[in-house]
Length: 106
Image 1 (spheres, rainbow, N blue to C red):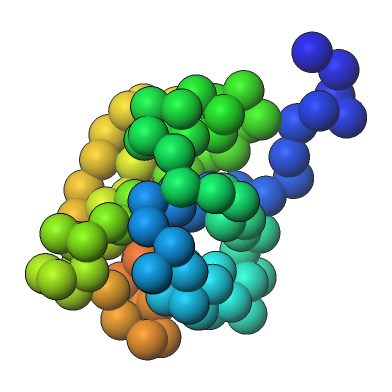
Image 2 (image 1 turned 90 degrees about the vertical axis):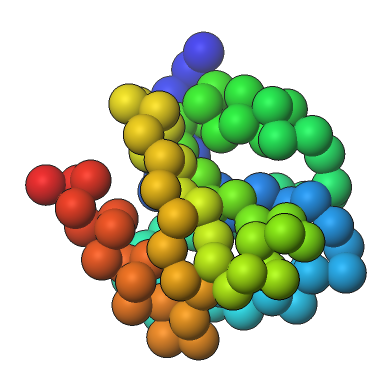
């Protein structure tokens, strides 16, 4: 794989349901405003397909949120190099997500 095929963004937000597109885009905007390169997967696909894409492109983190997560007001964050995963509150200001990303970047 050539270097040009790899992303500069740190985070891929997986898309599971187009009904939540606004939430995915709002989350991406919050992370970008905090200086975190973030992309949203362009269409709903199975999580395995999206994580394989994220690995191939070189993302360090995947944010996973489907109907169950939105109902519980949380997101799952997966640290792709280690496969560690945790749940954090889904907040408008994305502080809890940023905090977990920082933990894994240290």
